[in-house]
Length: 441
Image 1 (cartoon, rainbow, N blue to C red):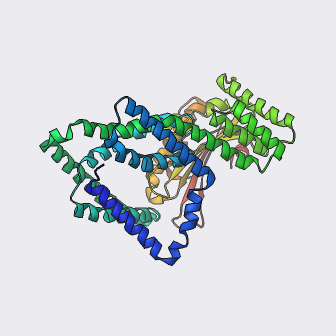
Image 2 (image 1 turned 45 degrees about the vertical axis):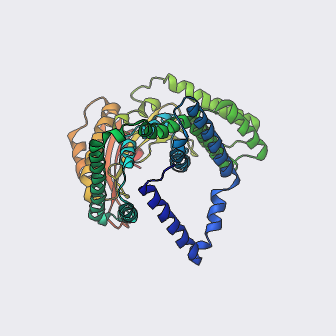
Image 3 (image 1 turned 30 degrees about the vertical axis):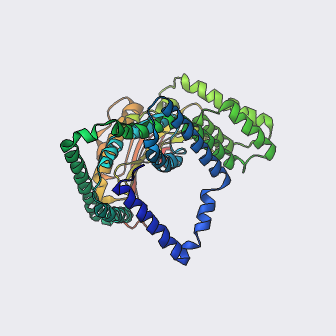
């Protein structure tokens, strides 16, 4: 189990960091608390399950002669990095894209480049020097991203990292070209295949853990609104109806939050309500144009722009609504973003809204261009015609504009944030049934 220069340098720097932490009283006193948090009972059980599952996977790979003792180091490194770090992702990947997202991570160009650049390393002195340099640059980038006025510094630092990465890749390609026989051997092939195979075979466990995490998070919240007896019954219902469906589980949780559940009958009715919604979604009813729009079809109106709303459910005021997550238009920490909202009742959507939040006015042009593109698409869906030029001009300039077309009201208006340090603002575009007083928000 040979350790290369990069790994040796990394281990030494980790040791130096641990020694520095332990030598400082103000940081040393926090170490027990960190260990207690990292190895609390539930997490320790999960670590054990992950380790046992990995051992089983390794044994299966060994039986088909894909894994051997030379891969012990790679397997340990994979478990301590990809395996344990993936715990942070089990609450992020939803049911629909869980396998697709994780598989794309495994097969991504970045993963391949990481493998290639790891085949050859520099001298120990070079590797030992590069590690703190890379960490320092990374920390400086993180700090620069917190302040939009430091965007030029962030670009410079990222450029430095890109040049360092390009040099490393060039060095590796040169070494492969001049010594291809050493590179093209079974050991190198296994070094590439084993991490990928472990990641793929780890997917079933990570999916099950994601389901478990979703269920636990659900009951942390429901414990505040349900009696102990109803909470126990609710846990049983999740196993019976939602064990493999996180989306319906989250929808059910949200519905219980806004409805007063006081009996077993109420709880059973809530299950029936969610099941009925699922049936309606599979075959959405037609909606007369004068009443509004099909709420289920309206959810999909902006999917080509990367915007899709979440669940359409009643709120505390018995009004129904759905909203998308914020779509970032640039990659800054305080990025300009856009969101889509639908409002109505249980039968029909009566208001469609786009909200552009301009946190960085210096990049307002790109933000408004994105807003115009989304507005065109939404208007075409809602009105079955091209958007009027007067509305496009209002969206581009941020000037208020009201327009009544038949029984629909179109409204564009800008809301300046008076206390925002960079003089940010929001631009809102609404199409609704009725007059302006009903549409404005």
